[in-house]
Amino acid sequence: MKEKLLKKIENREIRVGVVGLGYVGLPLAVEKAKAGFKTVGFDVQDQKVDMVNKGHNYIGDVVDRDLEKLVQKGMLSATTDFSFIKEADFIAICVPTPLDKHQQPDISFVKSSVEQIAGHLSKDTMVVLESTTYPGTTEELVKPILEKGSGLKCGKDFYLGFSPERVDPGNLIYKTKNTPKVVGAVGEDAGEVISAMYSSVLEGEVYTVSSPAVAEMEKILENTYRNINIGLVNELGQLCNRMGISIWEVIDAAKTKPYGFQAFYPGPGLGGHCIPLDPYYLTWKAREYDFHTTLIENSMVINDRQPEYCVDRAMHILNRFQKSINGARILVLGVAYKQDIDDYRESPAIHVIEELKKVGAEVDFYDPWVPQYRKHGITEIGLKELSAETVAGYDLVMITTAHSNVDYEMVQKSAKMIFDTKNVMKKVADRENVEVL
Picture 1 (cartoon, rainbow, N blue to C red):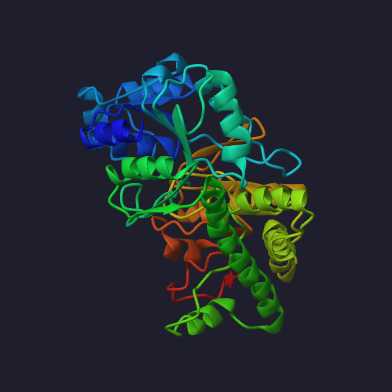
Picture 2 (picture 1 turned 90 degrees about the vertical axis):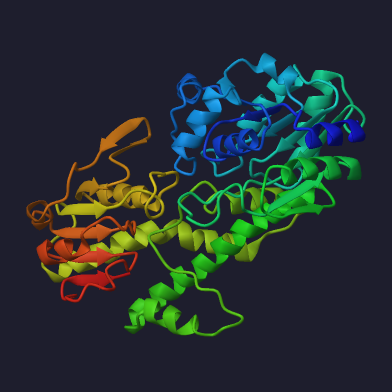
């Protein structure tokens, strides 16, 4: 099997299947197809499948023309019919791994996808899980389901591995193609073949580790590292506010040190598909070993409370102008979880809006990238445009996303008061009505 697959990789004869056509799956499918591997994307959403088959892109990190050309050439297609899995030699699973209402891992999408794959899995196939999850998922959950459902034996009839996605929406330098890749597989042969498959497609280094569990833990470490450091600056930011010190100036000074320090910045909370969620996967798994991840859990508490802290700060700002937050008209600028993208998954800005409404504020939002968002089954629609007259009509403007295509000078000149949680207005000269987080 090893020699057969390596030969097929070299000759570009591998047929690729990508399960899940979201922020991770579609860019991966495009790169596989661009590298000369005929690729089929699988998704349960008819809308996504139809858009791919029409060559219509819906992911920011995919070049529209690339997708269109690949579809026209017959190198990339999509389907909801999982029976076509039987034709694939390489299958990447890129489905969501959210948290449930109890803040525990919800791996139902992984489980259902693997069950679908198992029923159509052929011999001499590589299966790779890319979805972020707790250490042990690949061997404890995926492997038994595949073996039971297919009647095939891992290592003998098919190869199994884990290669964590590394997608940073809106990053202008690092995309799927040039970001280094980590691979951990069940057995050395599987690791060699799966790594060879990624090496044939990507420009970034492919780093092979000894097991799927190492690769799974590595991914959790990446995002927990960021969670903890953001929690640190958020807590220091609260202390600096009490002390009358600018945390932003402190960080700018600290980052002049050329070694031993990496700058992280405070904000209204954490957003995106990884950093707010991944630590919960680790703390949940750690309990199985009677281990409490105290430092990690404390950072999560700080970051999870940050939206409430921002609302508390907004209340005090309004109080200085003898204005109650109950009934105050507040404009939130930005609901995307990071600047210059249309992704609002786990956006802290939306949590801020919810907290403002809880205390009776009348809240509108404007986001040039996200005209509307859906939460709890309800669609919230933002302002269509931002004008000086519109801004002047609010008691407070809260900046919660640092989009670059907003006229902040106009906002400063028009607003009664501004609470800037992203320090995006640092270059605006007149700051009399600006308070920074």
